[in-house]
Image (cartoon, rainbow, N blue to C red; front, side, top):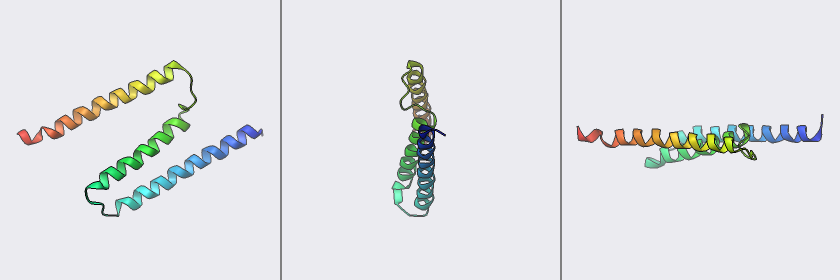
Length: 96
């Protein structure tokens, strides 16, 4: 086995372990009463975990192809549309 493969494996195990730790932090934070900041903390931890998955397991970090960047930007664009429509629905429910 080459040195590169071993260091890559160690790196991915480290990322996987950090994802497990962040999942444990999420579970712990669910039992702590932070008032209105509970969803903020949960979303912050989820964003960190999603960023780790996208950058390292999906190999976006270090990708030099324009197609990768286009797919990533379009994914965030459609996520923004989804979130804005859901927020618009939520904010207009009091009008009824």
